[in-house]
Each structure stands twice: as structure tokens, then as C-alpha cells.
Image 1 (cartoon, rainbow, N blue to C red):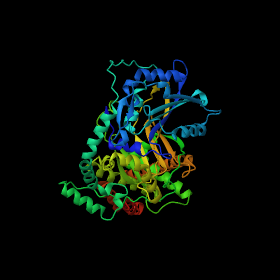
Image 2 (image 1 turned 60 degrees about the vertical axis):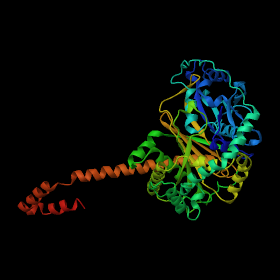
Image 3 (image 1 turned 180 degrees about the vertical axis):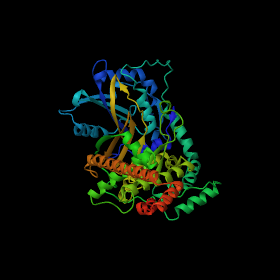
Image 4 (image 1 turned 135 degrees about the vertical axis):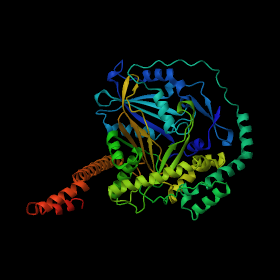
Length: 528
């Protein structure tokens, strides 16, 4: 039995009639190479039955403490029925991308049943060319992006032929905790909570200038520096740019509906840009998002003069995702340079902002997200979080959106013998973090993107995918021009005579003034 952390519990508390807190993904499968030539619900259930021991979050359910006096616990579900978690549906013809996205959006908008392990799989038939889709969602209190990817990989194979998985030894079933014991433990922890909350508060204040909303408070940097000195932390902290998020059309209160769009970009194109400009692949991805958001905001006549502020989740996991449950993440907060008009300057500005955020994150505590959540007692979080989120959406915003990029395998994978062609990740939108999230994962030579939005605030989510494609074309053209300029410069340098050659040319000019009188002038003009 393992208790949820404060951050895990916050993902539960944030849920309301308009907010869900699960992460998900849509895998597009080609069953042509599968032994049976298809993927079925029964085949999925059998696969899960053989490998469920490799994925602890899929076996666990919540055990609540009476009166929500303390954070819940994870316990093994002795009565797990996989048929209650695996569903099947068929799209009407022609089964195109719009129909798939609309169908997935409806499933994504529904909350998970907390009486069972917090996950579902939906096999979706009816796609063109015999392809099928598999939508999988797991509650964010159970996994983060990295652990979710690792759990998914544990269900996949390197070839159409499924690998043999050893059956684990039987272990005694875990006893369901008694309510009186949970209540007693909750009462004991509530007594010591003020001391633990004070420690969390102190750690959070020491990093106040890097926390959304708090960093905009008057004197935030001075307070943070003074707190670090009191704690004996003399390490210099790189200064961050202003992190006040401007108001945009996708910031504010959200509805319970969701929309979804997806797309892919060849990874080599992104790497080519990253090599040309000496930056990371992730920096290029952030620039693509900045450029796409700028185009979208301009089309709405709503581009703010300040840069948008993005939260970028960062894994701080030490154990393998398949060996644990819950979140081990923090977040970097960074500007997106949406206010920069020149594409090349925008690229450079995003690179500088990401470098500053990374340097700051490297010397800052990676626990600020959990510390902020741990400051409040469990009963308060359970009751007040949805209301506080709603109020925050009405009066202001901490960040404009979440942008997440998860590394995936560079080779093809197979599920039930079917090849995974693409995997489009999906994340969370809230009143606080904005009605839009962009999630990316690299897989088999491509960067697959999933965009989730609240349609009440972003009615044309597919246009963002179009803007991302346009931004990629823009960066590709920019990289080609940069390489062409470098080659031209190198060619000019190779044609420029060295000192000895120049002296010979000058001597030849003096020996034959009539024929070569222009030669010294030409030589002198080349370097200019």
C-alpha cells in the first residue's frame, strides 16, 4: 500500500464537471503484418492479461481516507476485470482524421471511474486501408509522461511476433486497508501537517521568482534571494525573464467539452534545423509552437505585446516508470517569443529563453511543484481546488499553455502483431493552465503531435496543426538559406589569396603594368 504524494492528489482534486486530469494517446495501427490480419478486443484483453504485471498503475485502485482527511492510497485491485477497461467502437465511413479526432474528443472529455483502476483502452475500427486506432487514457495521478511511455512500451514488441513474457510468481493478495486504520493515520498526519507545510512553504519561497503567478508579485526576486540566504543556499541563480502571462483567447474558464487535432513532422527536418542553428531538437519544437501560436493569435486579432508563457514538464524520475506509480515531474516556466516578428530572431530568442530556463532549473530544487501542493491540508485541497481553479481562470492566468515533448523509441513497435504507425499524445487543459495543450513524442523517425483544446475557447483546433506545418516550412527555408550563406562565405574565403599569393600578384602587377594594372585593385577588393 502506497500513499499518493501531494502532487498526485492535486491531479485528483483538480477534477470537476469541466476538468479531467488524465493523459492519453492515440496509436494508429496497421494490422497487415499481424498473424490474424486484424486487432480485436479479445486480443487486447489477452495481451493485457499476460503483461499486466509489467504495468503497476494498471492494477491499482484508490483507497480513500474517510472524510478526505488525508491523501488516498494505492492498493492492488484483487477483482480487476479487464473487460471493464477495454472497449471497442467503429467509425462510420469514410473514417477520416476529422471523424477519428471527434470520436476521441468525446472519450477524452469523460472522467474515469474512481471505483476501478484509473485507465481505459478504446479500440477504434473503421479507418481507411484496414488501419485501426487505439486510444488509451490513464489518470495523471498514476503516471507522468515518461512513466506512461514506458508502460505503453511494456505492452509493445519489437517485431510482429509477440515476445515471450515470463509469468510472475504469485504473491499473496494485498488486504484492503480498514477504514478505521486509514482514519487514525489521517488524524495523526493532520497534527504534524503544519510543520511539514512550513518546510514546503520555505522551499517554495526560496524559488519564488520561478513560480507562475508568484513571480509577478512585487519584490518576488528579493524575497527569494533573502530566503535562500536564510537557508544557507549561496549558489547563484541565473536570472529569469519576466514570467507574467498575458491574457489570450484560450485563457479563462473552460467548458467540459474537448477537441483534438493531430499531425506529424519528419524528425530529420527538425534535426536539420537544430544542427544548422546549433540548438537542441526541443528548442526547435518550442519555436514551432511559438510560431504557430503567433499565427493563430494574429488570425484572431489577439496577439499580445508580451510573449506567451509556457509550462514545460520535466521528468525528475530516478526509477523506471514500470516499477513505480505516480508522478516524478517538475516544470520549467519559459517565455515563447510569440511577440518576435522575425523568424530567425524568434528562433534565437526561444533558444536563449530555454537556455536560461534550463540553467535555472539545474540549480533550483526540482520539488517546487510538489511543495506548492503540499502546503495545503488534504481536506482543503479536495474541497477548494476546483473553486480556486475556476477563480484563477476568471481573474488571471499562471501560464498560457502547457507544451510537452517526450522522447520515444526511434524504431517501429508492434501491438498484437500490428505495426504502430504513429502515436499522438494528449494532455490536460484546465482553467489555470489554459484551454490548450500541445504534446509531442518522437517515434520511428517522426515527431508526432497532439493538440487538445476546449472548443469554447479554441473553436478551430485543426488550424493550429496547419500553423505548425507552416512554421516548419518557414524554419526549413531559413535553414537552407543559412547553409547557402555559409557555403558562399566559405567559397569566398577559399578564393581569397593569402599573403604570399597577394605579394606575388602585386609583383606581377609591377612587372606588367599595362596588362595587369587592375589586378592589385581586384585583389584588394575581394576581402571587402
